[in-house]
Length: 301
Length: 308
Image (cartoon, rainbow over all chains, first blue to last red; front, side, top):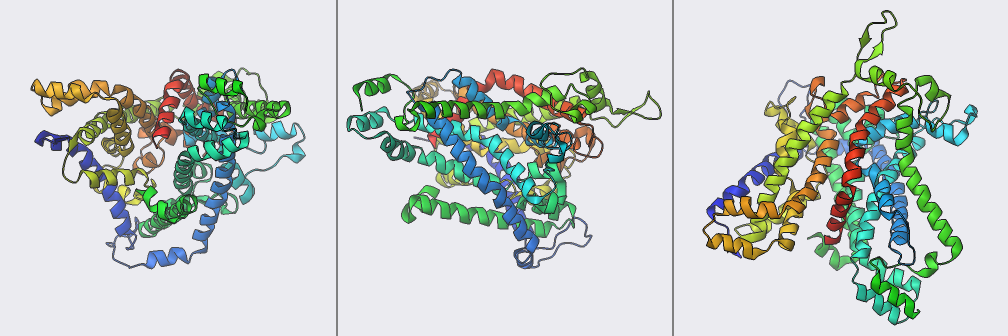
């Protein structure tokens, strides 16, 4: 491979300049801010407060409530999403089934994924409205006494948000799994068939291990996205967190602390880094469970 | 397993699944049924959205309908120009300028996508065809940043933008696109996988400089990869909510997601006709673009998945 000539460094410059200014610096700045009492309202310059912000947040019951809210929304979503996606991928790649309109089906289940979350949120708001929403009207017809007020309890709000996440993402996940299965070398399958392996053995012994890297990738990106869920609960309920504050995710809490309630940038930054740490811990734990101890570090590289 | 099965697999692109999983008739019908249900569940909210955009508020409250009504224009006027004043019928107030939102979003997303496409390809070109100091470390850094959660630098980003006096401008939403780690990763894969190195060497022998080689040879040849990742980048920028939320305060500068979010305020709270019209207007262009580009987009995402 040729050495990069001098002009090459100039060609790398724009990327790394923007990279440093707009990505690396903000991350470091958020980290340093988390050790100060910086605030949007205070006129005094920020000063160093040590780990006080972290101590306050980790001792705050509201923070832990948002932690459990976030999991209550993400966990059912990822389980259902993965199950549906596996099912769709299994049917779509089965050679014994000649489905018509596979391409259309793929496009239809993928479409919710590309629509702006704000738009989805307003649509959810309208469709789940308990008086005028189509969901109640379809479920209970004109029997208005049975209508469910979806945004009256924390658990309903969590269920709706979780379900909408599944609805938005299972198609994407299915497409990833399908391409994972189709990347499987033909001879694996043929050898297994010739050796007389049973159907279920082929699925659990060959297909699942083949798509495991894709599944791990989906799990980790979904975890990162799920722990950072902001748009949907924010557009629906803003900084109130909805009924019983059940829809207040960690990111909504972070944003509210930093920009709306007490405009405390220090506390908000600390929350952001705690969320980051949580993601790191769960990602490592998940990789260890899936790949075993010695391979986990290898996969991270 | 029978000989025919083996034979069938050799000629099919799709493999997999145990016969016992769906082989029996009942299970097959169940599978089809569930697939159909999933398809309907994905499509019906959008269908009802378009239908309800044509219905009056009273009609929407009175029950669900699968057929359009005739209040399309009313809803559109209420949304864009505001509701008719109860006092003076010729006065309307507080509409949402959705076309302006479209324009604003388009300006940002198109500029960001062009910058991202060009500079990502340039960076990927250097990484795939040359060796240089710190290459491994820099690449590792790019890979780590791809997996960084979006909120971890949010407050620092806000402080930076406000320090640069760039709040209420589009610069902080456009310029960061120059550094799009995922696009660099994706295009590097593409260049490594399908660019004939001999072409580059031939150009070099002919005396072309590296910058010229990039612009004249590598850039055009990498277009399929750049286009795929650009669609994803465009969608990301178009759908970005948190960035504009932090940067923009002036209503005339609002992007489409910020405007759409306004539908959830007291202004439109109980006017569902106008609300449905707002979301329908924002979905419609995406639907048209998607029906043309869906194959391309889905294949791009699939190719990304296999390379993991």
